[in-house]
Length: 241
Image (tube, rainbow, N blue to C red; front, top):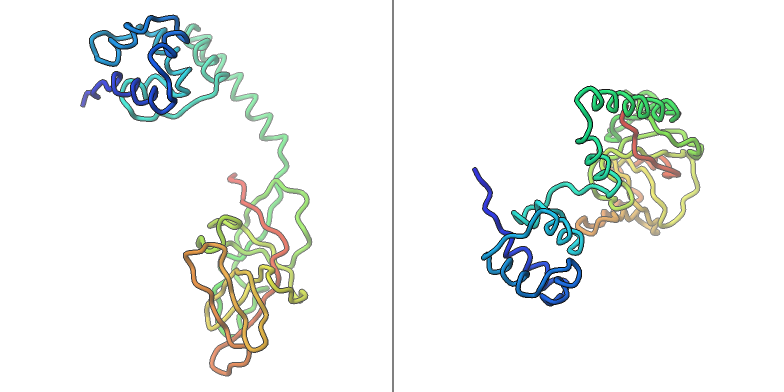
């Protein structure tokens, strides 16, 4: 389906958003007030070079000006590369692509990735042994990870914006209990990565994402298994390989 041209509306919308008069726009692109007015009324259409100038002063792109739909923006350097490559022959473009592929390959080789054995899930039941659980291998380019005993994948968004879904947390067992630090807790067949506050008779598990309520765990209960696996001392987002 052919997209409807929304140029008159978009010019006027951007003009009002940026509190610009017709004279302001005209001065920036060397056009008269009447010319800008005709564009907004739809009586005339700007030339391509005028569109480029409008996109520049409105800090948008030509497609958005024409159709009101945002396209993927590129940097000025990328835009200049595209402009230059379009001037090359097919054979020259192929050579350029080969050169770029070689640059990317060299950059990838320069990055050292470190394999980390990661527990697939923290969910556990009574007698769960973190040392014997199934693991997968994930990678990080960080070489400054803090010492840890267990690495585990995060599931969910309860600790955003700090920890994201599929991030990897590094857990130190037998750590000191510090109020407000992040711990891995195994309780009643479920496991959690939360900020923990150690009250007299209970543990209070707090999420960073405000849409989640606090979880209260009685310290002394014969009905459910409770295990403080350890304190989260570091974390990273895995590198895709």
